[in-house]
Length: 401
Image (cartoon, rainbow, N blue to C red; front, side):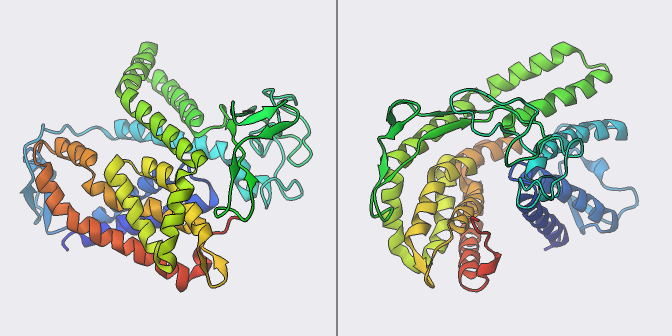
């Protein structure tokens, strides 16, 4: 309870910023912006409030302000900290600022103020040069990268907007016939749908406007800023190489998880699981949180849990009717992600990382025993919040339209 004001400040600010960003900007910056603003809010709070005891490492005795009344509680040994000058701290955070700005520019085409409301309405959209990214796509390029000019008229979009090419193709083996008249080979069948329906398997690669590409652009711009302060060019390539080596295993893991998820979706396994979970009926929103937490416990990643179980959550929602309407798949998919966060504190992979971070390797079992109760309580809380949204405040749930 000593640190409850800081906990509430961080949590409330994070939730509010995440809600605003996800609803009005896009998914790419929900965590980054929310985390930055939350840290800033806690820093401002600590200027006017301090807990009775300051938690820190044994080597951080200097962290207690001179003449202060707070006492320092030691957590463990740590390397002595060096206080960085303000300019260095500003440059460090500038990397995040550049990332945010680049992604915001990349998302201008999705913002009502820039691209009209609804997005793409040229009657109330800003036009070039005010809106330079109203449309990141070429339209329908078929099997060519971009048949239309990068800058030119499009029937439903801002005529002066930049148009970045993307590549779309039908997955080999899923269609027969010619490219002009493809015949689908994979179908969704009852009970998942009311009648046999072709299951489109089309891959779209928006290689210039993708979130990962925008992050790469931000990295290049950030390094230019670093180079202006004397950073050598080889530093960029050596850091890039070390990052690739460090992330080689996670990249392979995510690739396999995405492959498994695609096989599950297109083979009908996800739909079959959805039919089973639909038997829970009106209380399924509660179990959505449990499934999400279980997914993160098994995989160690909320992203992996969403990839594996998100489609199942959406399929299940479409099978359940509450009050004459199908359950909203946005709610169940979102609850899967929120419940997954509550399972992260007991995931074996994350326990190992956390224990290593505080120099407590081998104490994973103790950490698990201390966190399992909180994980179960918070997972149940997420489930109850989902039930409240369904039955008491359904208007808060976004729609697919």
